[in-house]
Image 1 (cartoon, helix red, strand yellow):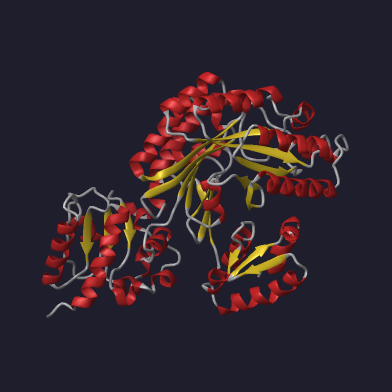
Image 2: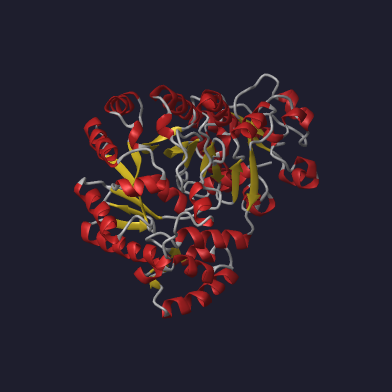
Length: 519
């Protein structure tokens, strides 16, 4: 039987992409024709001489045959089974890496099929498979998608009054939790579809509680599991009181961390006391100066507006101070009162007054005017950057790129499913000790994917691209255009070619605009 040369060229092209982006060493194939198996093995070995390329002929796919054939192999494997066989046997439609007890201790990275006449049906037929979806997106793209790693450090010295992120102030368990997080990183390393990282972000909590050696342990593991983009951004969130000159010098010299996000919040002592921050305004200024002196050119600071203690003069002074210090990136947030916080309790009890929403709106307008004067680009509702200083971590998130979250309460996203880790440090440790998943999962329906796209892209300077809506189906495009029309008439939304972007007036009412566009 002759080999169809055109079809073979397409399949070889797909396999070469798999090998290039996913670093597989072994191919286990379902080809009954010996000449095809031989050709497959020869061409891949010539293309990738540094790999071990081995193939096995199988007449039908069974767990026993796979386990027997792979007894002597522990490398990463791509299994290319007979697709029709899988469809006829529902018990095979589970990721092999969740069924190791049935196939021995081998780690199967992915399951897919390279028969091109069926290949494009995979997203629909295998919608419940975490890694297959991402491989498909990867192979259909000219290059692997950008992706990020988020590492949540769940410890703080003290609870700030307004913060509802997960953290613990019991620092004696820090080493045990960090060891568990390194274990989770190893267990979940295959969840990212590609092999290259564009961003690594240490968030919290307070990541600056980590020593440089502890930071290096995470980065060394990440370097083992993924290659790094040549211009990778590695960010450490930090509190000003942790950033001594010695710590900053060590961080710059001994680790590849190249960006700091400093939780300043305000340069006014009254604001800092109201928020329950433990650093002073002078410590914030010193931290910025020392960071610059240590060689950190990529700096961001957080600022909060809308607090009862923050008058318009104080808010403008905060912004002007940031400009004077030549801070290249600002993240600015309105004070939000969350129920399970000290501030939420005080507001409920009438101890602390809550300023009117109009105050936050007025100060947000001041912020946008300041950004225009000072040359900051508002590339996302809460983020402002000088040219070339956009945060890659932020941009990946708002553009819907894949990212893996490690640590208690960390979130992950692969393009169509979300996962979120349990929040309690104790529960997180028990799950790992018992060999149970640390995460819960939600795979998005098409309406949810539509809403997710609206929610994230609307916040950005690029806005919502109509082709992205159209990819979800004609019904969603019709719904979007119908609901966008009155928002444009109200001058809340504007059209630039095939993108729909918030106007300045619309940025003040972004939540309302999103609700109007939702499914």
